[in-house]
Image (cartoon, rainbow, N blue to C red; front, side):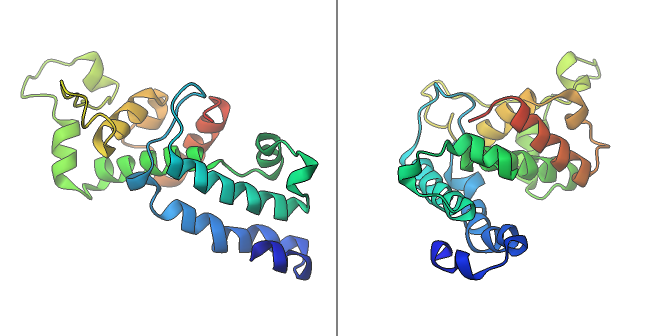
Length: 184
């Protein structure tokens, strides 16, 4: 659909319309349905692959190029200043984690990930605002939201884990960190 109306729209409206029609729909369920990849060596899920294909089609329509033109999508996204589906998933999980920690949006998850015990001893984990991860011996739940959230949260720079960091600053710096750390 986007490809068909692209020629009728002025260039200044393309980012807004692509965000409203396609990117917002992709972003909607990312924290729940997608397990993000932190490197190219990590396995690619079929859901992620299908979403990325749709996203790439939107990017090609935005640039007015065809698949046969063999345009490098990573370079195209960089030029347009947009993130890949996987990068959006990482940002969504980090944003949801920030909301859980700062605003207690899901109390039972906050209890699990923020519980460092009853000791008054300051440890590196507690002073650096790292979260407690849950690893099951069977490995069944290691791909769930809680483990993905703790893994991503503990890997971001300490300045982003600061509880006093505002939401807008957090999102801007997290996006910059995701792009600079070469997450696919």
